[in-house]
Structures are given as C-alpha cells and as structure tokens.
Length: 202
Image (cartoon, rainbow, N blue to C red; front, side, top):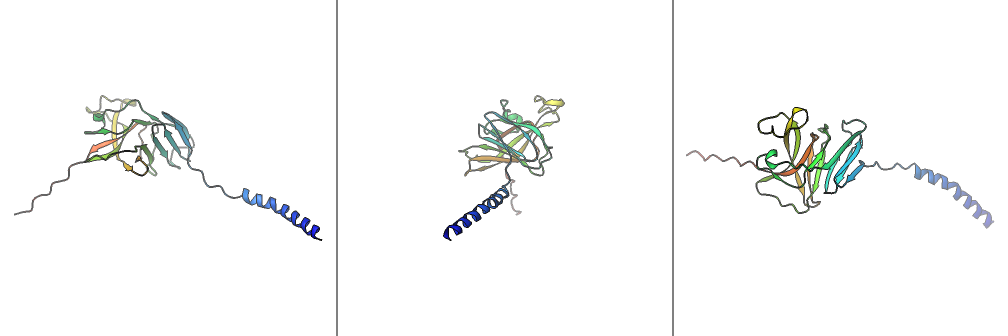
C-alpha cells in the first residue's frame, strides 16, 4: 500500500514538472537597456529606436535616449577628437576642461536630449566661472569665425550648454538637445558680473 502511494506521488510530481517549466518560461523578461558600443578612441554603432550608449577609453560617454526621430537604423560614431579647438575660437575667456570629443550625429533630440558625460574624479570648481559643454555647429561665416571653415561653405560656431559635476560619481554631464554633428568640448566660461545696485536716493 505504501509503495503504491509513493509511486502515485512520484507520478504526480513528474506531471507537475512541465507545468512549472512552462510557468518559468512564460515569465516576462525585464526590458533591456540601450545597447552599448565601446572603444578606446572611437565607438560606432547602428542606432535605432532603442537608443544607444557610447563609451570611450578616456572616460567619455554619450547616451542617445530611445524613441528619437532617427529612423530604424542609423550608423553613428562617438570619438576622441585630435583637433582640439582653440579656446579663443569657442568663447571669450573660455578655459578647456578635458579632451576634445566628436559626435557625427546631427539629430533632433529636443524631446529627450542626448547626454554627454566625462569622468573627472578630482575636479576643482573655479571661482566666478561656469562649467559648460561647448557644442560645435555649422553657422554663418563672420569676420570672427571665417578662419574656421566647415562643410557646405559654413563656418564653425559654438553653443554653450550648462554642465554639472557630480562629486559622488566623479562625472561632468550635460544634456544636448541639438547635437551639431561635430566637436564637443567641456570647459569654463566667466560668469557675467552681478549688476550693481543703484544707491538709494538722498
């Protein structure tokens, strides 16, 4: 009698195994993050609606968020640039911070900006200076930038975007709504002087 009960229990257990396996197989997997492309000096990937993360050996990263209007697959490259811009070319009083970078994706990221970050474990904040990311754009040529020619008869122009520094992670970071498809350079610019308060009337 005991042997029959043991045999029946074993058969019932075996019958439950496929059901348990099926329940495990149908468990939804958590959504994967954007694919990662890495390289020492440059990283290239076909970027689609999942977005992408580019990582370089110098500690620079670039995040393209998902669902940007870039099509189903577009080959983009994030790299270290050997052509470091001259400080005077970027903005008056500009001070370079870290290596020059380049991103060839001139994309519309106004709905969800591209995030550029750079590892800087020991960054000392500068008095009366503002930390920024300079983003190179193709602009109209003027007497000031006529020397720095780009494609299509246009010249180099720079947009300055506020950047932040996280002491916990040791990264500088900036959000870029409209990457220009050219160079990127973290740095510092002088803060405008505070307006003087007029003396009270006598």
